[in-house]
Length: 410
Image 1 (spheres, helix red, strand yellow):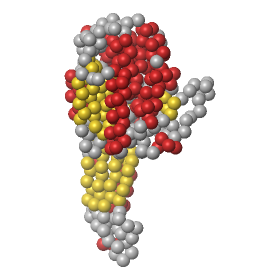
Image 2 (cartoon, helix red, strand yellow; image 1 turned 90 degrees about the vertical axis):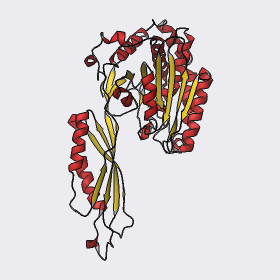
Image 3 (cartoon, helix red, strand yellow; image 1 turned 180 degrees about the vertical axis):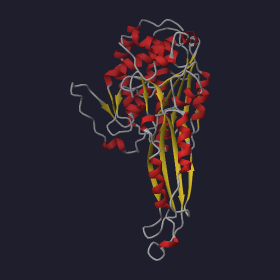
Image 4 (cartoon, one colour; image 1 turned 30 degrees about the vertical axis):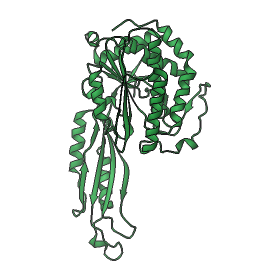
């Protein structure tokens, strides 16, 4: 690792260019990219690539990985002027249906007059994407030797990164460090995240006329309702385990005993032992009508993420950079949401998440960022890039992972 350039240079330069960075953020959010809109995703990824090339020039290597029904994954590699390889990872899909932007309203400033910028996906996570591109641009301006940087932009993170996960893992294995440009937790980096599961429960009953022969039917909806209530009781908030039946469909007509019904259930856990407990509890759930068949797809999507021994030195280095840039502290946080950082951490590789926006309201109407934080967040990533020109191993003996995790709260 090399010594960083004068911290004031990066911070001051980011402030000078703040309006241009915000302009790029607005350009990205004006193109809606719902996870379920293939055309919007394709246009959004084209726009993101154009922005990267406009600010950084053509990449030395580029590959577009087909996403099937999901958005494609794009990797852009810029060869460094020094040793090392860093991955900057971010998703361009959002949870918002296409057309949401038209009815979106800007929030009032905070009570102290602090400005907010609100739009679908501005917090989660298009601000982070723009900041990541500008971070490399600013780092280049310092003239300091820089590592090779690979950007990975995926369009299916909000629905589980089912197509992009192999690409994420491949890129992370080739890098000495991965920085995930997800939003911060109120300014804190994210070093612990819950694992997540998306379980699909299917109930298959027997159809019958609801008025003429209801006794001949076996209601899939009634049985599924019993199952969902029992599944919700598996939650253990004291252990950090949540169970949310998010989607339910079923039946064919009001006068037909339902022959089929499905539920999709979101599950979050902090540990592998809780995964096993939830699996066993779901398998033990029964319903009152034995004629209804219940099938459960135990689809664990992301493993739990903790601050592993490989990532602790990276957090230590990020805190050094933050202090050099005038920050009093750079807290870290344990949060309930999962991200693509979970995959990297599960490989035992160095990763920090939450390197992006400062704001609030992920997945909520009115999500926002504080524009006045954009320069500092961009400079932080740029400063890390100037330092990551060598292995992190030399820091490992100086760091106790137990001394970091969760300092920033939830």
